[in-house]
Length: 203
Image (cartoon, rainbow, N blue to C red; front, side):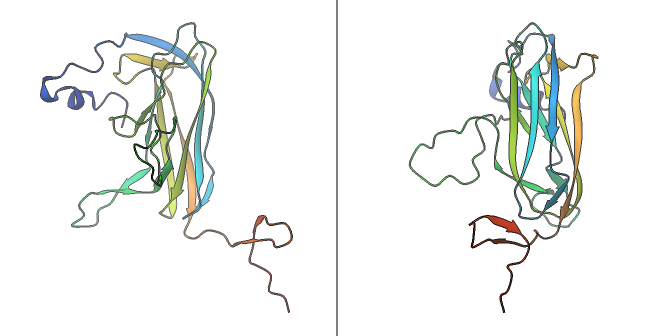
């Protein structure tokens, strides 16, 4: 899903004002410093999807936003309540942690950058020359080869556009192969470190 596609649905309910009414129609120059995602992963083994984005222009980006597609797939299995099924479960979302209203155990905190837009996170203003590192901590739950597509924008309303120096949209994709089972690991009793391989059976 591209940024801005869900705006009419969000803005039209209950007679509320459009959410993009104060967003300037302007193009902002940004640079994609890096995009990383492990190419080889395994079910139940945590991984990190990371983007580094810098403001290459002279104006502050009003609200840096990122849309990620393909953390889910569409199942054709009959009688499902929802056809969208996870490939990766987001364990920790990007952005500052939101304080819990009461003392409790936090499970899979969504991160302070979540928005009401589908698969979209917003990170606030990005000053000229500034760089942000955006990180999603995920856990693969379905084996296979999958590609995650990302798109960067200057705001949530679709008016503030982020572009590379070439004038192209800031978007890309990263592919990962997910193995059906995590590799064998054990704790080395001599060092206390977790290492790859089966625990050696002593004679």
